[in-house]
Image (cartoon, rainbow, N blue to C red; front, top):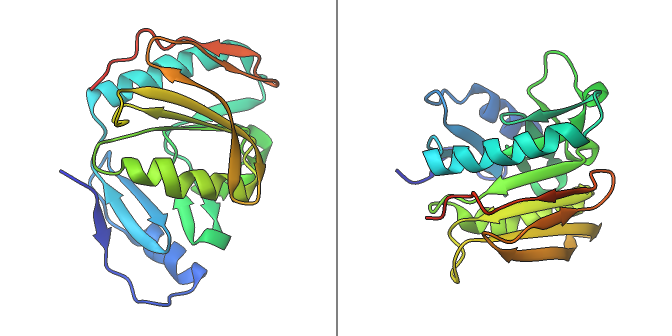
Length: 194
């Protein structure tokens, strides 16, 4: 199953889009996002996708402060781009969370990780890169199982406007070093390919 869009009225304001996003009745495990003003529904990720998320999350736990969390279903709001993204992994200080809300402002995130799915890889490669950069998210790790030249991992940082600088990149099997505050080398050798 590929990603679907949920009906909305053209020209809706941000608050209307958020309300539609919050009220979307999606099947359990699916991901509901707002991408460029369109509410989008994606199917439950594959086993390979989930395995990569688990592998990265396990590597992150030893290096993050105890008052930070790693979340898999917490949305980040980027109103200036009409975006509400749900990264595959999100590292954020717990004191940035608001009880009763199911999203946070993107600028409080320390790291976002997106793992591409075949049906929506272009969002992760293009739209979300620009959105996370514009919101000031310091680090964006893109794990692209569906890259045209074969599975790759790219680390972006130093956002300016809606552009990131590429800090590191390589094929699955090559390690990627996350800078401070993480100071961690992500091992990708065990990542399943396509």
